[in-house]
Amino acid sequence: MAVTGVSVTGIGLSGTSGAAASPQAEARPGQDVPLRLQVNGLPVDVLIDTRSSLLDVLREQLGLTGAKKGCDHGQCGACTVHVDGRRVVACLTLAAKMQGRSVLTIEGLAPEAGTLHPMQQAFIDHDALQCGYCTPGQIMAAVACVREGHASCAADIRESMSGNLCRCGAYAGIVTAIQDAAANMEAT
Image (cartoon, rainbow, N blue to C red; front, side, top):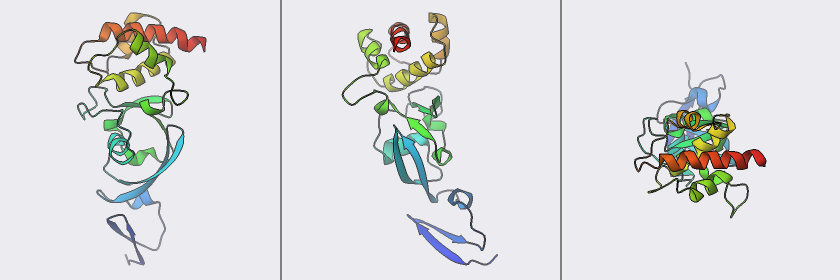
């Protein structure tokens, strides 16, 4: 294979052969590639390392620190965000796979700046948080729980929220907050 051109992207260096391929098709581990996606309703263009998780890109490159790195193994739910309307754990989601996707974080959940989403307000009203570390992930999972139709009873809520851990033990308040917010979300 003959190298016909060289391109420098960030700190990565790549040679190109005669056939043009997409940036991701040529990407090698550790190489920077461009990523275009929507985050909280806004278009974002960012240069990412092909090994980066969505969580790392959100926190380190975009400054959106609501999603937390609790376990970095997809077991605690502290990094829960929505991708194309579905909840995902951002620590296990490869950022390079987000090309053209829509990501919603806790920072973009409220309908307008300076307001709260009904779920955020319910968490406050029902003391569904203590230290607050898991709260953004809990709220994002709770919104998904309601949208997925799993908020009809406490048992369904607990099952739907089982991927989100709270070391402080605020589970009773979380379930009550979800029940309250579900009624408000259905009314709007």
